[in-house]
Image (cartoon, rainbow, N blue to C red; front, side, top):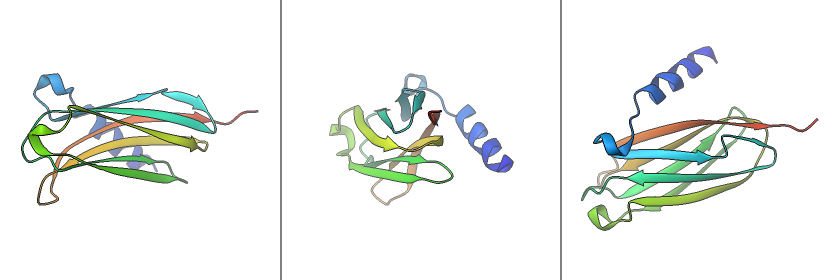
Amino acid sequence: MRFRILALTLMMLAVRPVGAGERLAVKVSPRMAFAPADLNVLTSIEHNDDNRTVEIIAESEQFYRSSELPLEGGLAPKSTYIRFRNLPVGNYTIRAIVRGSTGRELAISAAIVSVLGRR
């Protein structure tokens, strides 16, 4: 568990906003919510002719949900939006992964979100 937290922290520190010349940024709101929570995920994807899909994943220790959206290379919209509905209690890593035409990962960005229980 500690290794996973450390790995996720290091991965997040390596992520820069798209404006800094990177391919991908992910923003999640709210960052903290009460269960069952709806999370809004907005990605900003730099135009690139090789972009073919973006996969957006919500993962905690007890829960996993993902969605994959097609991209049309340089013609794709710069932003994508998805809503994960009714997420149960947990600490979530929200990841966005852009893949190219061969399926290779071109960019990864992540955010951490907490869904709290009601007492």
